[in-house]
Structure formats: C-alpha cells, structure tokens
Image 1 (cartoon, rainbow, N blue to C red):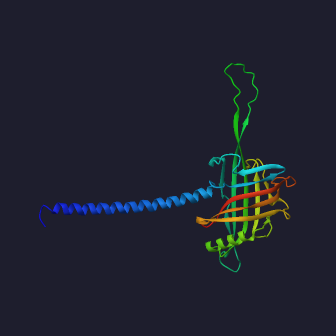
Image 2 (tube, one colour):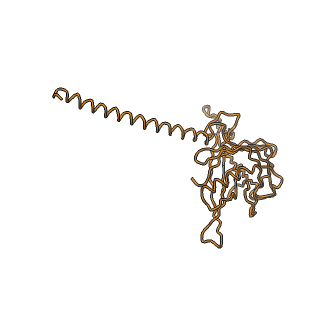
Image 3 (tube, helix red, strand yellow):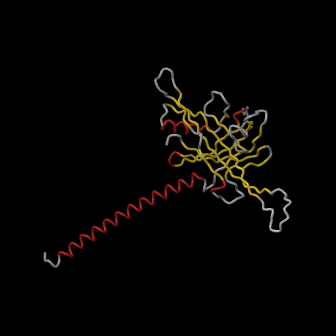
Length: 264
C-alpha cells in the first residue's frame, strides 16, 4: 500500500467506527423510548386519565360523587387515589415454626377536593377602596373500599395472585363487621370531613348490620405490574364511627377503583 493511501484507509476505519457507534446509540434510544412509552400508557391507565376512578351513589337522598365528576373537565388535581392501608397479615400455625398462611387486605381510597365560595362577614368599614372579596375554601371528602381477608396460602406472591383472582371470580360479596371470622369480605368507608384522633367522625359499613346489602364486581381489568381496575355496584348502610345509632343509607352505588397487589 502506498504512503498516499494509508491516511485514507485509517480515515475509512474511523468513519466505520463512528457509524457503528451512531447505530448503537440509535438502537438504545429506540429501546428506551419504547420502554418509556409503555410505562406512560400504564401510568395514565392507572391514574385515571381514561374513564377516571370514582365511588358514587345516593347517600340519604343526596347525590354523592367521589372521584371523577362527569360535569367537570377531567383534571388531575380534582381528586387523588391511593392504596394506603393495604397489607398482608401472617397467621401463625401452632404446629409450625413460622407463618404458613396469610390474609391479604387491599384498600382503594379516593379523595375529592370540593371548592366552594364563602362570602365574607359584613363589615362597617366604609372606605371606598374596600370590597367584599369572596373567600374560596376547600372541603376534602374521601371514600374507601376494602377487599379484606383474602386467603394467601404459604404467604408467597404466586399464591397471592391466585387468591386475588379467586376473590374477583366470586362476583358477589358479604360486608365485614368487626371481630367476625368471615373471609373474602368487603368494607366501605365514607369520610365527609377530615378525621383525627380527637376530632370528627366517619361512616363505615363495618359498624353495623349489612346482611341484606349489595356488593357486586362486574368487571376486572388486569394491568401490568399486578395492578387491577375493578368496577361494580354497591348499596349498604354506613354507621357513624362514634355513635352507631346514626347511619346513612347508600343506594344505587357504583364504583371504578384501582387495586394493586401487596407483593411488588
């Protein structure tokens, strides 16, 4: 090879290396972008950008709609959803050294922020530049649905999914009361205000009888990463947490909620 051709040969090698590097980068970018698109679709589906999530019905002859409000545009800040309170409880068997059986509890909570206008109190101030400016306040209202005491044999992930699938296949469910021994039961809570240890009260199906009440799952959508979108109908009586003689009747209820497994 002549001396005049050697630099051209080296340059061709460098160009080839650069092209290979560029091709590798393009492949990586495409793979990352595909993965990102898939995750964003899952996120949008689970956070309610499609049909939205809600628990609604007629509560003491008054319409209640917690979650998406069909009369308003869909906005992410109109309501929030979470699964706080979900857990797996281990059951110890006396003849064994460790827990070999578990119960799963799955909570879907929806909190709506209702904004309302409150007129200021009348004032004796007569200054011309003083105006009675309305005050806008927020009132959070929360509803929760629990799927409770779902058996998980051997406390392992695959058995949890089997237990959840068996639960969803049941279709109709009984409401749980405190200290009962039933499994595969449901609970409905309603918080018309913020409740603390020293202030406020809430309403729950668990504080009284609901033997003749209705809870049915009509549809379950299985999502990636062991998420579930559950739809159904319900009617029950909700009892006050501080005085069970006070109650509210929930009729013609429906729900679309997000549930996820505890093993992730």
